Length: 390
Image 1: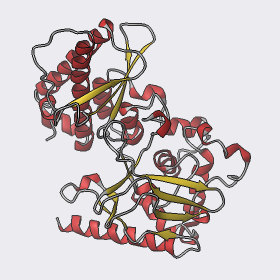
Image 2: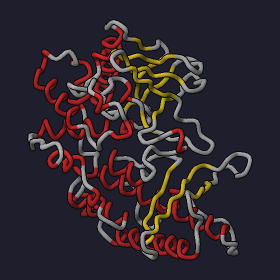
Image 3: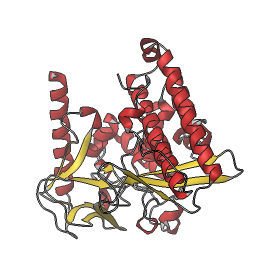
């Protein structure tokens, strides 16, 4: 406990140094009401988050990071970087710029920011998990998550990067923290949350003024004590995701966490060739749903009998996954993977079960199929049968 407190104190000092570093540069600004601190005092594993300690008005400036404090490609001013929509999966040039600063060591002007790189843990990313952990998460997903490619595969094959450990870590850091081509200090400390149906969690936007600054601006009034969220994949015009096909499973694979509500779920219905089933799941609107209920909203095509059969088969498959794990020895399982890997896999399993239960209910309602009662369960119920956090 004492070591944990010391670590938290060191983190707080690091956050203060970063803020003062930004403020000390011409044009640098951080609102006095903005602070970075532990996201949940009761759960240190959740890391830090960005909060406000006073009321913020819509349109108020939260921070302004000067252009020369942003790590970016050396030739960023070229026209090829103008269209953010065409940004690659991983900006090779940004990775090389980061590696250059790291090689400068104490001579780099980015010292306060580079401390976050040195603290960056790669083992929370699925591509860095143990083989047993990968097997488990693939067993839950029902397919090989690696099939779509990994950050490091892109680094090797497209960026022609080296297998030096620091270079690999730099690629993973840029892949998970960059805003297109830019590594923006302070901005990348905000946690992820989407807001689609009845949430307004994404309460800040950034404005990139090339050659001048990156500004964080409140998109609504923010109450004291509220956490500042950014969406890692949201586009306001789509009410959900910049990449239409970026859902909860993609977020898990690319960033290492099971996202909170709302969630977008994307499944390939193997019962029908080339059919994608896409729906959003969120807390029900207060004027239509009871407290605690979840609401399904279909994207594109409405569900049919084939969709319902697919949902039911997937839910049954997940029951078998849970039963398989319950039959195994917990100590043996944990000896083959980290507790973190198991717990994240458990949360993903729970999220899938909840998603399929609600999708089945919503489909039955859509098809006017009589159901005895709405018993969709919760994440705690989904954990029954042996698949739980230890």
